[in-house]
Amino acid sequence: MALAPLIIVSGPSGSGKSTVLDRLLEEKRWPLRLAVSVTTRKPRPGESPDADYHYWTKEAFLAEAGAGGFLEWADVFGNCYGTLEREVTPFRESGTGVVLEIDVQGWEQVKSRCPEAVSIFIRPPSVEELENRLRKRRSESADELQRRLAGARVELARAGEYEYQVINDRLEEAVAALRAIVGPLFERKFHA
Image (cartoon, rainbow, N blue to C red; front, top):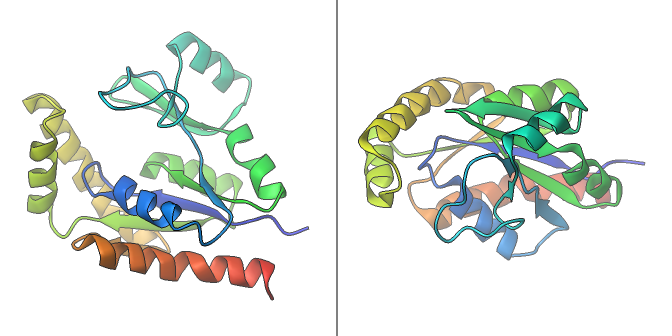
């Protein structure tokens, strides 16, 4: 039995990957879901437990990691983030595609375990625009902003290793580009 597609979407903080993905998923064109990640950080204003993230203690997270329950996980700036195996495999087996919105570190881990995964990197139009977007969010201190920008430069340097790149300059164009990548994955797997 063919598994439904596994799609990895990465991009630096502020690239707009969540917004682009949300728009695509709202269209409900295919049986496709976003895996909800686990994190040890505190919720930000407007975030909902079990919708945006599963918020766990660091102890519970590390116990699950030790038991092999994560498909991928990493410690990012002192907070742990990970994707539970049970957020992915049962859905793919039942015909629902799964999107992982993860960083480059997570992408490397998933690709080693699931080489069939399709990888897409969402890029900002420029580093300057990325910095503007991060400043407008006003969710990071000056030090955090600089850390995120340094991390973005590292991630952008790896973008060429992904199968696809989408520049998020104009939202509707970025959504259309993502749609053009995702659609054929379902046609090839399920309608051939």
